[in-house]
Length: 313
Image 1: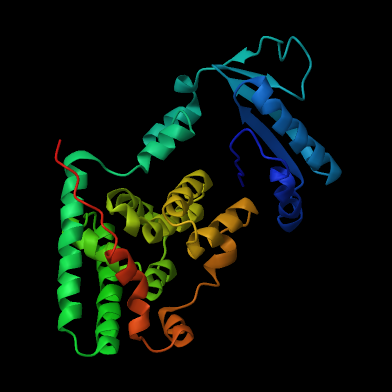
Image 2: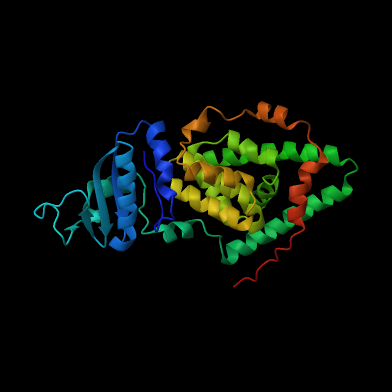
């Protein structure tokens, strides 16, 4: 297993390793830090201290920076010289195998954050216009409704079907067009619809939720970003999961699903804990009870926000 942290580490960050060592019966670890010594060494020292206290063997502890690495464990100059040992990522077997499998090593966390950044330019303008159209459609239907409970039930039913349709399009290699994406973004604001996607979650869904996290108008991003975090966590990409949750919480600091997943990541919990505990759609229906008009309130509140369409540059 792999656990990752950004540097510098706030005090107490690494304490979560102790229950992880016990829970996973860890007997040995390898520590790797990236960056200059003043940034990496405190974290390596603290990790080694915690490991020693837990009886966990540190097989190696390395710092890598600007094409060289240093060992904190080996002090033999002929093996690990003070000036560091040069390495070339581009010529390694690992790099070659990663390329074959379509994996790309990004240079830093900022580069990863840019892969989840909101779309801009004509794509943003098109999505904003599609969102405005989807909102206008829904407002017209609401105004025409004489039974809001029945309308809510119909909206939830349509939303559940929309989630499954989006997953099917994604599985077949397609991509939602702007209006479909906008309608799904509105639907996901309802907890029951969002949780349908959660119960159906597969590691391969990362690309769908990543696409929507980037394309949806910001006010509708937290559900999609949280689903992206869940899919990324399941796929073993905890850094991408964390970045996605940061996006969700920047937009809505109180978004509960994002807080739940962030707590799991910060405490180094394994997604395996959830794989066999996810409720079925039928169990969700039983737990949440009959659909009623109050389910629409989160969506109605977001529709009242004014996200103007940016000018086309």
